[in-house]
Image (cartoon, rainbow, N blue to C red; front, side):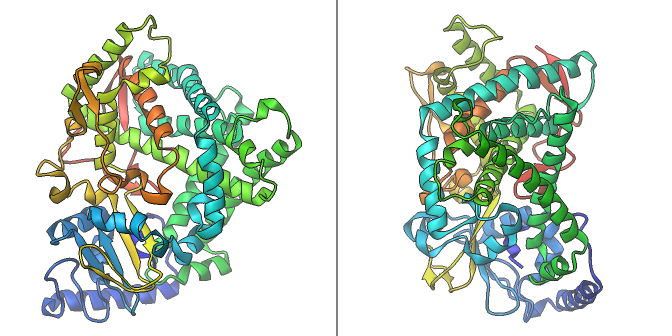
Length: 523
């Protein structure tokens, strides 16, 4: 098991063989818990003979992020070794220098690795987020060029604004008129899905609008199958014994059977789009989207194009919707922050001749320093991808002195680093956008946004694999947040309490458990 991708599955089936393993593990766990002197725990995770950290993990995997954060916060360098049966262990860190070493300084020694790639290969294939070496470099080179073109940036903004004004805002207005409680997370996910499909395929799924019931039904089936495939694929990381998922896959049993069906639905939809786009090649109306741009490389097979697009859908749908869901929940706990955002938006509106029915331009979005600070602060506390794992190719020593052996996994916890006093100060668990700002008389509101090191704030990764869509993600999130905040006040169905946050569910990203229920009020 790759223990550090901790993706929670509530409906995981247990075979007879697993029952035997489970009983045996419980027996040993109880034994060692009743004989605590058998365990060593000077710093880091409690380590038991034979089983290593497994007993503690089994007791805390339902709250892994909180548990590992607490453990790392007590370690001298916010780094701990995770031991499991056998010789292959791992390291978990929330130390910026260690993260920089992994992601940049000694980049070649820390690839994703065959274990990580194989677990997700059925779903993601060898797309850019699930590849190493030359395969990754080729995709990265193509994507890097395309993401820096003005035409793609304009297409992304136009698409996001159109979907926002024709579907998202009307959906909130209908909810307000009917005084109906809605799940904001679900609406954000549908919006993000429609948006990324348009950008990636130049296809409009219509999940949020539902105007065309036939198209909407097919697209919704694809969307839910995509979500199931992501959740079930990530569930493979939860097995104590890594070979179990292969047995279930061979027998076409339980979660592996459902995963196969979900992936078939996703691939069927994506293959149909790719086939039609190949037939339309040369049509200028289809040259704006990402798929068409990658099709310019004749070395990419239809299957490889599918892998590329699925990876971008995963990144475009799940990350921004997760980030905005947690952001709006945090905002409900901090009305003063919301008012400062409103003041900034009013200042920007007053300096132009545009009204509420006009969407913001790139230049106006760049002026939203306080809003970007607030979004960054939300990302710091609730990163969409809370942990990331690499494989170690050769024996190494991290900057803080931690020894890493060949074949070990090395995980950096973005969730934990946002809660380390050694990194962010004693108020590290407080939502305070001001930590991202500098005083600047020439800027709107007399403040300017100050970015942090990507190794102190690794939400968008860092080094050679830093997220290419970072600026586009900020652009879309600011557009959505600004447009909603200046029109509506969102009342939480359950009072927001920063000290008692909602539960989270991990698929390949961190979603809010049970969604975000709100009532919409016009300003």
